Structure formats: structure tokens, C-alpha cells
Length: 476
Image (cartoon, rainbow, N blue to C red; front, side, top):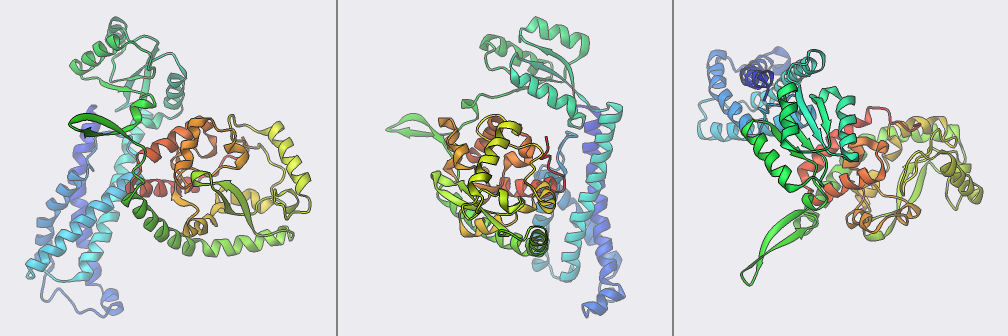
């Protein structure tokens, strides 16, 4: 644990406190402004409840919010936390605080009863606290990247591809807050001790599951004694969720394939319907404009392209997409040039595909229209899939649906991706979009299947919004 991390974690408490008071004062000022009283037909509150009385109430309430923030885990030490996750936690914590305030006012009406101030203070508090935390986080990350303050010195252990993966990722992304001090193949304690003495170690990441247990046991003890964080990359079996049960008094472990059974399945469907309706309303104006532009550039063919994919349990579904190819190149039996288009695509896959495994990705695809190149880069072509979600063929979040010819190339264990509905977005998409190789995409999607929760869905959706503003790299 770094001193800089302790400092920033500690300073968040008074900053949050000040932001809560600032939001409360701003809410009172807006409530008493001529604009608010005219717009919402409100009488002046100051005549019956002065600002000093209100501020005393705010001073009483602010520590309650700080306590809720602490319970919600908002005083994390590390500098590498994600802002969108923090914003979600702030929103949740302030909402819990709002409910408590409403209950307190119900029991003690002499405090104040202005619903306008309560709701406005809640919104402003969420904004003020989030903005202050964003500023602090920016400063903290700037110190990590530019000055090396708060960087964690990490030792990588292993002799496989996972070590290379972590090494490349850490070196490419200094904002993660790590600095590799060495990479070694053995976990022998005498080697680790020598490196720790010469360079210092804050964290050790073991990337190789073949290292002997005897060496690992000694290493774990050494890390505990010397206050070194120990991490390891798990095997597939170690990531599986288990549940303890018993048969006739005998303990037995049951492998839990997914929480998406029973009530989990029902909750996800309700969430999908609500989310799809909201998304359709928000994206409808964009869909109309893009549809007109597609027709203006290429009058032949439909605006919405039905792409046949494999869904849950191997059932074939039609995934809706805005057409970004010229009609003559679309793989659709309604296309009079269908056979030629199919042969041309096979040739492009053979000559230009830059992905390994069952999936393909064509570099510099010549079949795209001008508007098609734009909408695909920003994933606008996938907006019609919200109708797939509403229909029930897809979910908002899940593994991406693949074509039948791609699924036919799956290895047997890859078919676990077909045990739930495919998604309009997914954990793999927000972790690398189309740049991941298929095996890494599979592992991320499998993690999602085994660890699903509504909160995880919300986090992925929020992260998807951030990812969409970045241009998709479809030419590499």
C-alpha cells in the first residue's frame, strides 16, 4: 500500500463532506431563486425556514452520507479504479441516503418538507461528488504516469503465454499503475528474495499453473510476512463457481454453471425488456437519419439487413443490422448476386482475415459503403438489435452471436457460449471489441455466464456507452 494511495483515500473523506454541503447549499439557493419559484410556482421557503437552519440540518446529514459511502466501498485505496464504476457506486450511495432522509423527514417533519430541495440536493450531490472524485482520480493517475508516485512494483513469474500477455498489457498501459521490475520462470524463494532485496517488490503475479505447490506455499508465506501482494492467474477449474451440498450427510460440491436459472432468468428478461424499450426510444431518431443516408447512397436492397446467426441452444435466429455493405455484396438469398457475393466473401476471408480461430475479420473490407464505414466504426449498425432483445431472441448483455459456419468450427467446450441468449453487447466487447482473439473472447464470455448478476449487466452497459464513443478499429 503506497503513501500516495493512503493520502488520496484519506482526502476523499473531507472532499466528499464538502461536496455534500456544497450540493445542499446550491439546492437551497436554486430553490429560493426567482426562476425556480416562477417556473414551479413555489413560495419562498426562507420566511419559514432560514438558510442557517437548513445548513445545520445539512451538517447533521452529511456524516450519514459519508458513512454510506464507506459501506459502499467508495474509499478504495488503489489509483486504478474505473470512474464509471465509481459513478455507479456514488449514485447508489446517494440514492440510499435519499431514502433515509425521506424516512427521517417523515418521522421528524419539523426539519423541512421541501421535496424540491431534497430531490435537487440528491442530483447535485451525485454530480458534485462524482466530479470531485473524477478530478482527484485524474490527479492521482497523472502522478502515477508522469512522476511514478504510487506505482506498484510487480514481479511476474511463469514461462508461458500468460506471462507475455500480462507483460505486454502492463507495459502498454502505464495508467494501470504497475511497473514490471522483473520476469522470472521459477518461484524459488532464494531467487525472489534476491530480486526483492535489489529492486523491491510490491506485488507478485504468478502466471503459470505448472509451478510446484511446494514452491508456491513458501512464496505465499514469504509474501504474507513481507507485506507483498500475491496474485495468480487461475486455471479454468479454479474459476468455476461451486456450491456446498450434502447427500445423506455426505458433503459434496456442485458446479454452478450459471446464475441464469429460475428467478435469475426472469429478472434478466424484465431488465432486457425495460432496457430495450428505453434504447429504442433514444436511438430511433438516429436510425431514421441513417436509414435515409443508406438509401441515398445505395438505393438497391433493404435498410435493415437480417443476418442469420446461432442463438441460445443452437437455435438459428435473424439478427437485425443496418446494412453497411453495398447490396450486390450482401450474403442474402434475396440478393440476385448471392452466389457471387458468397464467393467474393470466401476469397476476402482467405486473403484478408486477421483473426485466428473460428471467427474472421476482414481488413480494409472493400464491400462497405461510405455511410456503412462510419456506422460500423461507431457500432450504429447494431442499434436495430434492440428489437431482437424486445422480441426475445437476444439479451442486452451476453456472448455475441456467431454465424453457423463459425460455430461449426467451435471446439466442444466452446459450445458453452450457446447455453444462454446472445447479447447486443458483452464482457468481451467492452474488454477489447473485435481486437481479442477468439480464445480470450471465450474466456471472458464464460466468466460472464458463470458470474452473471444484474449489477454486472449494468456495469457492462455503462462501459459499452464509453466504448462506443471510441472508433472501432476495423482495418487492422
